[in-house]
Length: 566
Image (cartoon, rainbow, N blue to C red; front, side):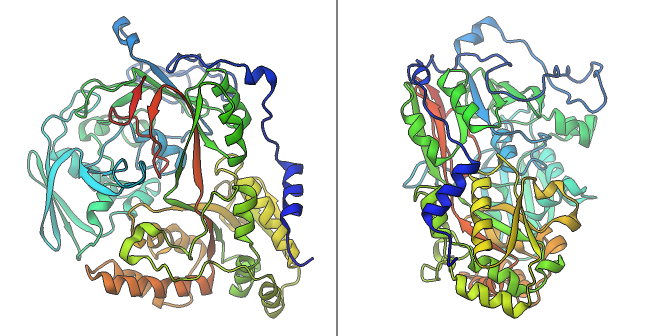
């Protein structure tokens, strides 16, 4: 067999993946008004039925059960709509520095704020802008190449009523730097250039970096930069704060069951304006078919992670719209290079060359996902190389490399978590067939590789986000020497990779950074610790009357300027 054809791929996927057929009853379903409350037992929810636990100060019913804050809703508040969002999953905790995942940042984004924020609504396409604008900090300036100062607003309050001051900002970042627990190591990695943070006065904060950091302002506006309350955190501690956190965002915690739902209520003292919804409910509905049905029945107002084959289904539903945005994110594979089956880089190179990415995009994504020129995003601007070749598909070369490496049919397992990545399972099934076509004994294991002992992990589905619109955030922050990939799965054979990575992040010289990044990509492609598949397009099903723009990150921004009801 010379390769996996489109007809063969479609046939294989039809055996293992169904789609939602629009029944006459469903087509006739009339959507109710946006914001209509949905009961906790909304159709499609398959989470636990365990009752949520009261807030701090009351006795929990069982050890380890999530603590939640509970508040009554005044009658007058019912004039504002309630928004219900059907999601594929929720994070296990709500500490924003721990919940650094697609499902985590989606919900923590409306509970916490940054010093400065990325204005996604700027730019030529709504939801993809990169301009930096004030948030908690009303202004900022570079005092010199190593020192950045932020002046805070004086009207920002946490959900417990405490006023945010410079002391809280200092505490937020020092928590990442001092005796950092494993759960915060990823968040800490975003600020590895920082050597000091100090309160100049009650509303002025000054950061010092070890060397000129070309993307520092972008760092504090991205993952890991959410601000925490010192007093509240000190009172409850690390574990309890993760389950009932306090932020400054437009919505505050009411109820949290990680396997079932998260309920937030409007925080009307929000400095950014009165929230437009009185309550937000994120309801766990793992299966896409159940999410579509819940949207059709008016049980939810928005559904996430809609695969391309369900877009025509949603477009037939009365009162429903599809809103789409290309993600600042690429789906990738990561290899455990310490496994004997994958230790020889020629085998990893063969795995990469055997993947027909164009066929995946055309067949799974209907041509809507984007192929990449190696591990690059066009948002890099002057650091993007538009002439770099696309990642190649060469099955003949793959077979030759396998023969050179003495591959003897060892099983290569591909681990994927069902329902986490849009079309993740379907892509895994297709790639396994492509590997088999060049002589690789491949199998798909439906389990997140994070749930396996480290020594058992081989190939895992992953994604890399373009956090900073710069290779420092999208590439080095995932594959560099301070990251989990090098700590646990790959040690570069060529030391030049890490040398260049360190050098490019210590200079404001963009021409040098461009050359360094291109050489790093050459090394990365040669050593093949993983590979990029494509940049996905994210689709949401949204009921008409909900004026909301999706972003190129999984952030769900429900602030007043991005959520209105008609």
